[in-house]
Length: 228
Length: 228
DNA sequence: ATAACGAAAGGACATATGTCCCAAAGAATC
DNA sequence: GATTCTTTGGGACATATGTCCTTTCGTTAT
Image (cartoon, each protein chain N blue to C red):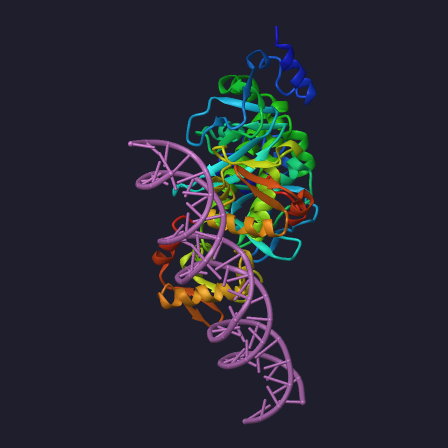
């Protein structure tokens, strides 16, 4: 008998037929708290994850140790799909930004029951193709716009709802130093831009973090948010 | 009866079983000359192309009119795969860099005979996933390295064989002005960097274009070539 | 050949960003 | 509470890159 919660999620996103009846008995549900790592670059990965609730942050690390934010993801999204197809270790690190719920399917069962299933393959194709498209835009965005715009964009992404308009300092990945790495610039420069933002009344420094004061203004500065 | 040339190509890349026997009668062969456009951003596209010979350049154009090089591609590669899956107009412009041969399958037949074929879908998945991976690296590369490195990389890519070590000026897309757009910088800056390259004896200016003098040196400067 | 023109290279300066370091503000230790 | 240590913001300067304009040079028209 399959878990009722699972059925609810499958129906919610209308993916009962994608994860076919053979696969469903092997799907488990996992929860992660804000700040927890769901998978870590370079480590082996054994499961295909389906993000059904919450928000995650995807980032990568270069040889020199610089980190670079790649995207924020919300449902419906797959994690570990690229690794599944390429049969490699985890390419990027994925961290929960809020409380997160994932459906979790071990690769062997994905392979066994999915590899020959056109519906499932088409689903993978759709998702990965969309990822490719988003990354194309991201590439363009990053090469075309200055840090100012990217930072505004980032601030909006992490202050994901009204009650979280504070970029907290105690998060491993939310300290300003990490923020800098994440948007591909230096800590110094982030400070500089934040100073400008403060002068313009867009944000405000507070002990423990940054408070977004003028959401509209930030939005305007980052016309289209790349990280979403 | 299927064209012998087609059979040769299918066997060369061992893709007879991917483009199954139902699809094969509808595959045609197309040739493009250096400089010709294979597809153009924003226009409708009707065919899935398989690059089996030659080299193409993929680039995109932003709203402001800036062009940005995305990649160079050599066989075996697909064109129009993303558009096929997303069912959209052409996303990027593709231009032949050398004499190019493509296999060409109309979308309706791809859809009819491919959408239910796990082998074909797996092939698409592999290719698109690889594209995604390459683009991920490209993003990282572009954000991490200065124009100098990208230009070196570009020069190596366009001087694709010994006899073409000259970046010709008469190519629509090879003038220095276009080169600048393609690597995401200004014409002025390309000139500046080229000046440095000249001083270092890496390249030499000649009426009509740039000659690569020290291929090794350029290679060293662009550790790993993103455009290949 | 000369004048007019347009493309290509480069000078001068502005802006964006990186690096290094220091000072102020907390936090920890004694 | 004084001292030390660590974190954080910011100053000063270097480098990368963009913008604008001038100079140079080859081409075309006369």
